[in-house]
Length: 254
Image (cartoon, rainbow, N blue to C red):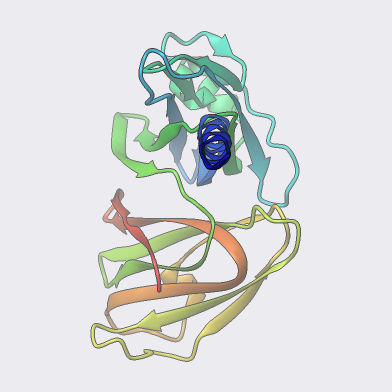
């Protein structure tokens, strides 16, 4: 009888692992012309399992800042329009490029689209997103970010001086309003200024520079920013420097 119970428990555990749903966010998705440059996003989704693992069936949902659908046509690496769904056997990858990366004269007439992407799959998948910035003379900068899991306590490195500023995007994938508290800390862990609190509605997105969130700080900043929320939110961060940009890590807080 004991062996039967253990066998049933093992079978249920395996079934749970095999059917585990994968949901994660890319807290910033951007495409189109803005301020004399063009922005684009490219997403890659991979089923990292082996050849005999289940097929991953999923969807990429694009959402605007205010929670409404972001109607953006996606393209594959060959500039062919593709749906926002995927069917990936073990080891397979699918690419989803935003319209600017499709090129052509129509790029000049594209709208500016800003929001976030949610990836949902019936089994675990991995993903990454690359941001591109280009001018009339070609590529100006690019940086890749990993997918983000919603957390209630997280942080990032912050740099802000005459040449640099830190940009942060936050998305609330939940069904209720998130109350966000931002703590700006120096290298010793002390608050530079009092914390700032913001409300982020359900399924909404916001993005800002640290200099915008803490305008009273006019001195150089080298430290961290903590994001504390009453409900899980997902974040990503980039360091902007003299027209180029690079990825900054988002790390969980205890």
